[in-house]
Length: 132
Image (cartoon, rainbow, N blue to C red; front, side):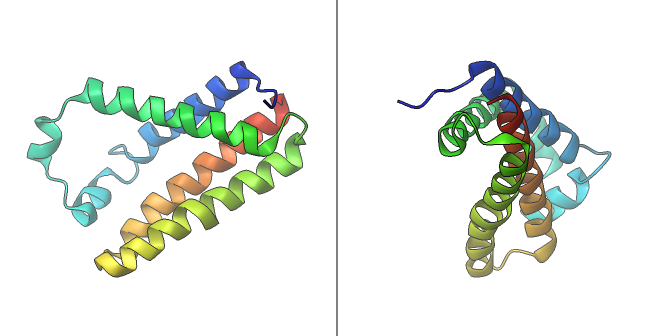
């Protein structure tokens, strides 16, 4: 089983989680995201934030953990950045793009969601690359 730096995995997950909180906040893309995703204010008010944020962090943690296996312990800064950016843009955002085309979702929604995951995985790769 490959070596994994658990502190790096935790910090990488935390970076993606914090980025999501900022990215989807009213300061940045919340209103446009809600409009294009079909989420209403009422749905937001009636949601269970503990469940949503808790599971979102667990998913960020799992993504970071598995990405640490993909990178390996000796990826370094350059490879961490390149592989993280590539995974976010071409695997995650690209996969969203395919779904969004068939679901007739807007380009704005793809840019918001795909942009988040591109930066998320770039940060994950950066942290894992530096810390091993």
